[in-house]
Image 1 (cartoon, rainbow, N blue to C red):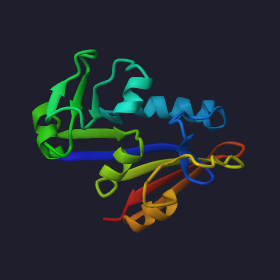
Image 2: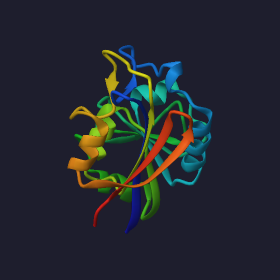
Image 3: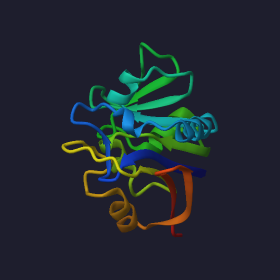
Length: 178
């Protein structure tokens, strides 16, 4: 099986992905990152997203795996024929891949916190975009275990590339040491 699992997050300088109401503030939106992110998702076999993100952002037609505790295992989303609802407490990820017939390619993981935590030790790469000069007090963290750079490093990933997308907006590509 040749599968790459890539995380994607944009965070403020204190590591938050959203405000206390689980909304992404306008200060975290960046056109250069959005275009790069959408192009990356277009090349994937599957996008893994949390239920809140799935409900907040309609699927543009990509194959989605929605992480939720509201189902017994793996079921088709009745509102979206391209999406499957998955409860990781009831079905192993490997079984999901087998059921979906995915044996190769890239799987994109787009969050939120619980989803990033779930895949932390599976990531082969993590594209972390940080927006300087923005803080979100009482926000939603990228990872529950702390600041994203510290969490990724502790999980065995290292920065292999840094790209300035715009002034104050930096992409750090993290890769797992094999």
